Image 1 (cartoon, rainbow, N blue to C red):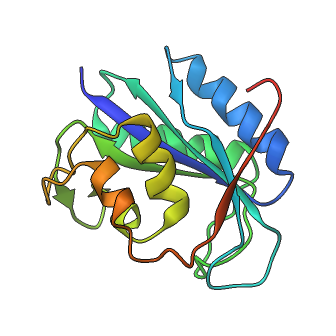
Image 2 (cartoon, helix red, strand yellow):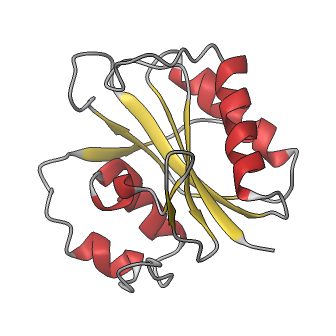
Length: 162
């Protein structure tokens, strides 16, 4: 079964949505969780985000998994519109699906955000520092140690009972 990594983020009722999203994902099997990090929104004004990354093994095909993640977002009141830089109740992004590389109108794996945003790369590098990016071949730990956008400040926070 492929090992997958999913980023979880919220800036509306953050603790509730993070906690319940993790609980829903746990129903599918054993999870590993990064720490939770807080960061200011990028590209718009709004409340700060909480973000983390979870990892798990699955036999669910990639498109079906993406659909399940979107359904979870919708159950949490996520409204997708034309502006991707907006506040959200819940954001679930499939970052990695084994060593799959697929960039089309349905799926972007690995997610480009891994190399763009501290709130994605830091928790991923925490969970899987030795794992290598399927395109660049660089480990996520090494990517984090050389991350160019250090101005993207993130800091750890504690959410009870996740």
